[in-house]
Length: 283
Image 1 (cartoon, rainbow, N blue to C red):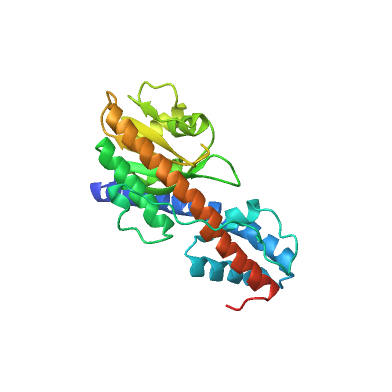
Image 2 (cartoon, rainbow, N blue to C red; image 1 turned 60 degrees about the vertical axis):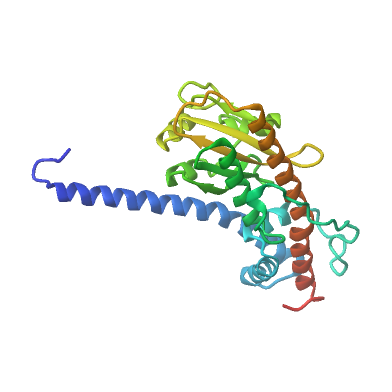
């Protein structure tokens, strides 16, 4: 509503400014989440390799990240959760088995290059949305440091949704329940399903989602390492047995691939970082 003395153009300018400020706050929150983790990893590296400053530690991480195409945040997360090297001069992971990259048989993954985690996550999301029949969804991975799940890929969802659910804990959402139970979870109607907290329900509805289905990404041992969720703009009666079976296969293949990637590509990156730190490798 236009206030006395205020024009419609003023209202439009105020609205644009509000949108700009909200976008700025979202960006700052996202940067802060990643920066805190990377800063903690830098501190560990400075102490471990007697580095002179944080920039030197950042350089080691950047070189390893670029060489192995691993996100800085992922590198920091695994570095902080991995056991400390037993010997500064010896390999960090001397006896690990090197396994072949698992095959991904679903159609959306056929064009993904070797070791490309971002490409695999997008393919998992694309395939899931195709099976469910929607164009809104997201992929989350287990946060090794904080616990819970964090969004890694998404499509068709609002920026406010991605900001609100950027990291979720172990309760209050359907994806959290699916991760906890390691089972697919269908929310037939977001408005009435008791799984959500009031704030989560409001955020989902504001994004235009009225129903959702979450599929855990599981390793061969049944460990949940991530989640893919499809959102629909209308209540969902249910999925067919064939759909559920297809989604289970996507979740299992994706989970096994992610476990391989962490044990192989990410540890290769950490091993290289370790070698840079102890001087046995050159950039």
